Image (cartoon, rainbow over all chains, first blue to last red; front, side, top):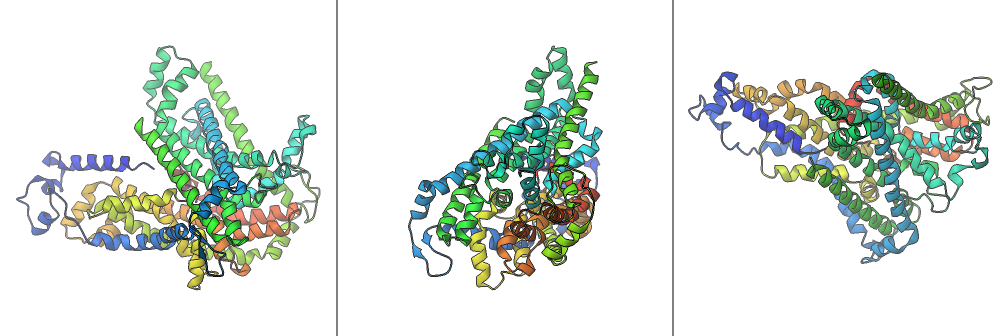
Length: 333
Length: 273
């Protein structure tokens, strides 16, 4: 995700190419302006020529990205200043839609729910993933290929299918209640997704289930890259497993934690599929998230302006948090 | 002694979490083996295992058509997106031009943009052009949505190839197109396959866009169809489980076949689309 690595790599390649003339056909290029042909000269050393043909190569990607992502998003911003039902002519509304996002309890609570999902989608899987990766150690992935395959499955299948599956898991006759009865907790069984207090937690834990495998495997791959002499040094200094974790493993995984945090926070704030299928936002408004409300406001309630204002606030929130994460993880490396 | 304990604990932890992932899947597989309409109580081996629920789900929801629609969308997205991403990644990796940093930053913004933020006007804009309810609308929208990651990914791959390769070809008089087509792309084939698989997966799994851009029931994709099927058969667990398994079967099959590629892609920070 960070854009710093590739440029590093590029520098080293250039340096290698510019090295002793012995290293090959390209030696000519970097050696001297006394070059051999007009072409080598033009492509030659010093400041590379700006190439207009680059824009041709970029055109298809940028055109589709602009037409289907950027312009609609700008259009979202524009619509957020109107009162429009999607059918008749809209009227200017100034900042009224934004005022609604910040004051309307249903809209505000959807944002609070999305922020709370960061706990379930990001913090819990990352904390558990770090702990488990430390217990399993770096070679776990290779030693348990079957587990690796299985742990990735929730990332592969459509989230709608995840939602349908968990809807049944949490139902009165579902596996969650069956398991609770089996361990003697029959008294707390309930229809989890219909419960005002527990539906939110239940939906959040589905996010944990989806993200945990990803985090675990990202961290395991990261531990493999940590220099094993650091662990030996820590052991020689008499560090126990806990100190070893905080002194070697955790700092060594900073980049991986940054990646996992970025991915999971975006999916927490932008969640839609699982909530839409499992609870649709209910019971009451107890599990609404911005994605579900944007859909409902725009296509059911005919409040396109409010939907767009909520969309703009959501984008700003995600941008801010992602920026903060990249700052924090980059600064300390 | 300590080492052995660690190995044992590691294995136990891994087994516990593998089990936690498998149980829900096992649950729907077993539930789907019951005849439609059965009340399924938790995790049970069905009394009379049958495939009736699959047949009923298939015909009730029209999965033949739904899967075909999904295939059209996914197979349309993959080649277009791969070509666009390769071209853009190539320009960003090997060429100098005015505004390179700015354009790349502009593209990367898309990685953090939630798609529900753009989908409402997208629907109205496409409707104005008469493009809603066509697979083309969904295909182009998905390609646009997938561009930031793809261009970023291909740029990384091209930067990782030794620079000497391009330069040698350029000295031999090859134009930029030949360098890309004959020299770089063949070397980047594994990365290209990984990206193609991720694109296939994301296109197949996309829900919200498919739900909104295609309102016509006959044009729906499989996940959107599943979403509506859930609404219609809220309590028939065997039927719903069978429908779910039908929708996930293609991606699971592709995943099991190419899992090395998928895991490599995911580990390098591919976001679930």
